[in-house]
Length: 114
Image (tube, rainbow, N blue to C red):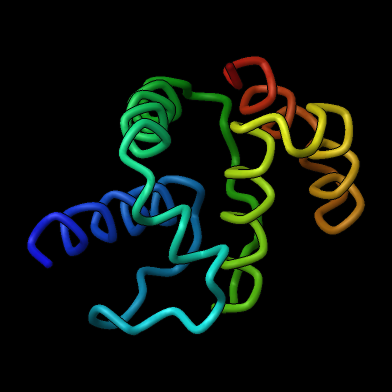
């Protein structure tokens, strides 16, 4: 459980860096895809690296991901793109379609996908 809480903390850090509001406490995720992303250690290691790069990028602007449902959807898309279940182009299309005017931020994330 301690590892799960640590991984959840990493997801919260990403949420903050991506300018999503910090979540209150450690809520149980009902979507198994979200739980899989939170529990995926290699994904979380990559995510931590992405977070560090985002922090160092002065031109990165907030993507307006403001609800828990939006946070979960973004995490699922990112996890799917990381594991090549969707293409980089599909990820970009999903995020750009939902959050227009953030093409630079999406391109920044896409360029760092494995």
